Image (cartoon, rainbow, N blue to C red; front, side):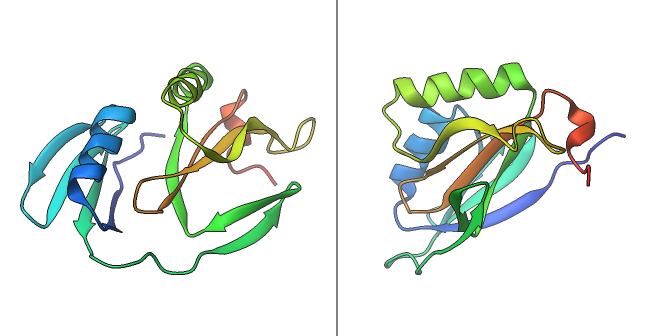
Length: 139
């Protein structure tokens, strides 16, 4: 199955901080931009940081595998080696994790590596990987 790129637009309160985080920390190539938004290439997907001054809205959490998962959140399912490299890069950059990198549902259907962290505007991101990619939609 060939996946097509998704697009998501999300609010940030500081475009310079978003540029430093997504472009610098995560290594996303920057695309078009204006004084109100910036396009980034997140592993082949188009994400757009839109300026929205003011405080972030209150976040909700749902329990998953003994952790409080922030809602909403977005991210990418990566190959395991890319996930491990990203986790190491984020640790080296001093990123504070909401949920430290770990293996979720260990030994169960849907076993996956996952990690959660916030961007400078408070948007939650999750990156995950499967040792067996066939487990992505397994029940």
